[in-house]
Image (cartoon, rainbow, N blue to C red; front, side, top):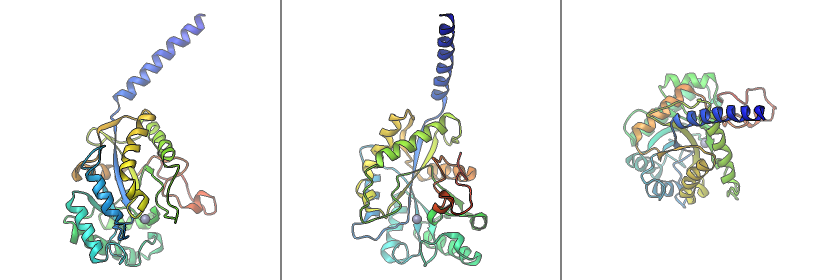
Length: 295
Ligand SMILES: [Zn+2]
């Protein structure tokens, strides 16, 4: 009896200590990022996403970070694409570089040093022509990088930003509806909640920024952007992950500060493997560390 009472007592102490610590940790705020755009599909997915970020019942006026293919003819390298980049900027979002090559969405390690350096310069200039101010952030195509590409980013004064959770909308098939998207987000947010309790997420301006990866070229994402906003907040509650009263970023300067701190630390919440890990490494076909850059 005494043993049971003693165990209960220690559990009460430990549990309340853990609870108190969880309470004292800052809440998270989601930093939404979109890759691959601007999208010129006739369904106007980028436009639809911008509209829903501005007007939605979860938090009107959400600002996001758009990693663009700045000079490809089907994206930023066309009049319509340039106009979309300008609109995105005028609406208060931040533009970052995904690809600055007219050849398009090619993993940066495949470029020669000279071609990569040139593409970073050209891409940045194309973005700055539509959105004044130096480009601060890059997310490489397929999220693949190595020491040489990191050195090239540094020389170009841009910081790489990867992500903590993805809505898994990067691969666009004819059938691009993810029936498991809610449970996928739930699992990702569970990992975020664990990282928060372990004190691994850095605090910026009183919150813990959590980077979410989406694609504005995905028409399903564009049709369901508001639903994703709901899901992020609802599934956070379901895994006891406290979210700031403003669950998403509302202005470019604080979004950029958060992205900068995460880029400096270069560690992310990963489930089985880093989101940036190439498939061949995940399956053990090629040597590499699948947990590189994970907390
Ligand atoms: Zn991409």
